[in-house]
Length: 172
Length: 270
Image 1 (cartoon, chains in turn blue, yellow):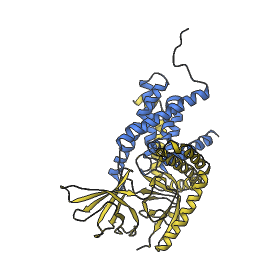
Image 2 (cartoon, helix red, strand yellow):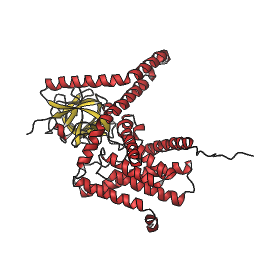
Image 3 (tube, helix red, strand yellow):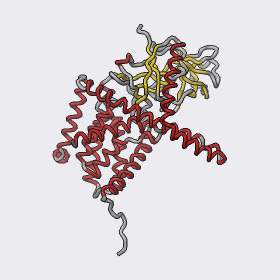
Image 4 (tube, helix red, strand yellow):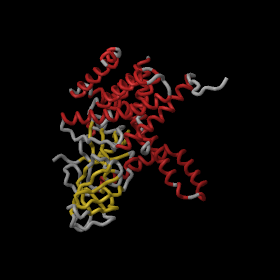
């Protein structure tokens, strides 16, 4: 049942990403919801759930991706691994600040991974795939929107689960 | 690092699964599953895309009305409210009208085509491509041109699956189309997309007289793209002294970011 529900969840956010978000004007359409949720699950909820979403969401995106098959999934899984590695070694708690920094790093590393794997794939194939890296869009706008959505998801999650803690200390 | 990987076997297993799936995809074992998933999801995606497109239309209408001033504010709000209420209906009506107009254009020009609905866009940033609900089973092949109701070229098919296909839009940086300017010399050139933002016509002979407002159409030099499909109008020309060619910026005659129905032109096999 859990696998079924998780599959439905992945399909819903995948369809939302491919058929709804992309219809909206730039830079909102550059938001990568699946990547955002992978980062959120990895940092805040559970690393293994993040990995499963990276696999499922990646495979869904492969169906509509112009890149070589596997590159999106591979980039998502590696991003989840990197985020978990950084979180385990450089950050102390599951705070909003950690999430925001890791959200930015995750988005950036995902874009660079896509670019790197496409470059490698181009060496071995004769495809006419066009390597393209828009500095402002991929270094600034997409990470910014992903971080904004991460903040919204963070508060929604904590409010809905009753886990929101006081951020500031109040005098006794 | 080794210790880190060892303590996380799931990540290693999933990486192995990814490589296995890549292998299965390239030996075509996964293709039936992929086609089945796309086939099942296409009707849902078509509806979701229509909703998204309606929202985008509303946003576009709302933002372009900002300049009308305070006097029209109340009226604009009413129009916006009506736009929201009728968004779904309008999208459906627009789709039907597009289909009817496209059939008329094709009949007049002796062309055959497959009418396809847009079900999504490529999720990768910076790539301007749309996903259509028709594929190999409908006779669609790579490089077939896609047009709107009035015969305006909006892109070319870049990838085909059994029940769906992907088309690169003309404003994508990967798009290159052999074109002719409708002037005295029928000047030839190549129209390329510029980062999804605009269209540029390159390789225009320097001696040819080109004016702002000239219409650019397909030249027919490509075997899969017929001659005479409208691409856009010239709105700026740059001619540098140290270059042997001129460059023209084109204004597209249709918004390619909000297409809902297109026609894929099918050309007779040579």
